[in-house]
Amino acid sequence: MNSHTSSLRFRIRAAGCLAVAPISVAPSACQDTAARKEAQKRIMPTYDKSTGRLTRLDYDANGNGKRDTWTFMDGARLIRLEADENEDGKADKWETYTDQGLAVLALATQGRGKPDRRLVYRPDGSLDRIEVDPSGSYQFQPVAK
Ligand SMILES: [Ca+2]
Ligand SMILES: [Ca+2]
Image (cartoon, rainbow, N blue to C red; front, side, top):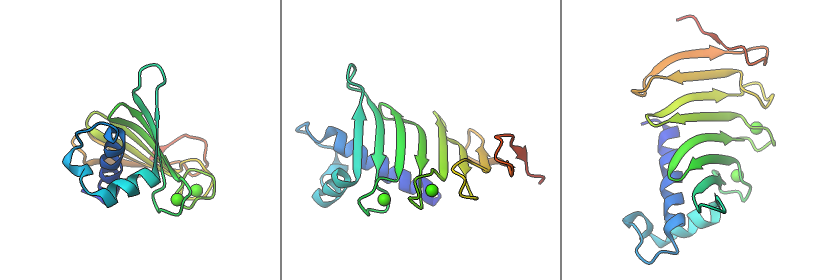
């Protein structure tokens, strides 16, 4: 498990905790009151008004009071994540998920607010290839192995 996965698991667990907070029976992960309060402070869920389904979680990953991570959800299923890790107002990281887990991790390493490098994963979670887009035109080319 890499740090992205572990960080994400915390977010999802904390979000699940927050989502069920009004229900009287809380899962074991919510029994830690401090963790629950921390989740409530750092995570802002959005629900579909007609279905009540969770659609988005905005998150303050570094706890400085400014949201820097946005996850797009279909209920409990994570679809996509965007993060502005240096909080300059432009996203630097995009993660795309399938039912098998992380499918693509795209990174903006040149501060342009759009990806110039992406890691494409196989359904088993192993890295398939690394692609680069040095011109920022969304024309990714595989890096030679
Ligand atoms: Ca923050
Ligand atoms: Ca940024």
